[in-house]
Amino acid sequence: MRMGDTEVRLHRGDITEMDCDAIVNAANDRLLMGGGVAGAIKRKGGQKIEEEALALGPISIGEAVVTGAGRLKAKYVVHAAVMGMDFKTDANKIKEATLNSLKRAEELQISSIAFPALGTGVGRFPMEKAARIMISAVSKYLQKKSHPKTIVFVLFSEDAYAVFDRVLEEMAGA
Image (cartoon, rainbow, N blue to C red; front, side, top):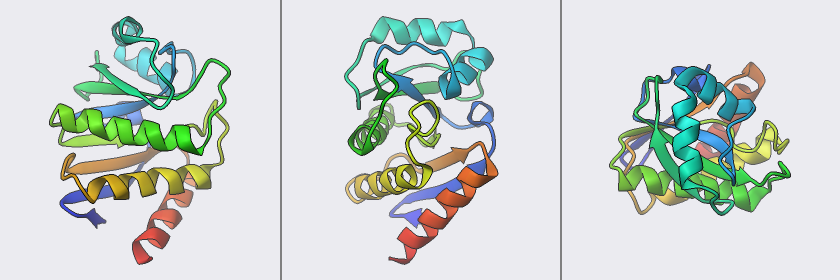
């Protein structure tokens, strides 16, 4: 679907395989890349990504910083801090992390960015709530901005994809 000048779409698969300018890492505030999306990014892209991230941290929960993407197809990794080391998150942290990721993309004039379902892995935040928060944040952001040109929500499981698809359809119809 289109939101202003931006194409917003869904993709079922592995975010580390995305061929776009940037992928978003569901990070903790220390920027340690252990498990979940962060661990997958580090395994596939290399230790250098975590080393670059650690040099920029710690950051405030809800904030986002950018590193190179190592061996990934993407050029950048946007590390969006959706939780602290207690691995707890909430709606506001997810919203702020989404908005700040988009701000970093605009600052770098990134054309395409891929988001995982922030906070739903180790953070155990409900998938449907995360979908509503993230899609609403993207919609609000794009009312005033025209970058990035493509935003992709990359969902690893069929269930997660189905939830985001349903929420996106509902919100598009509203």
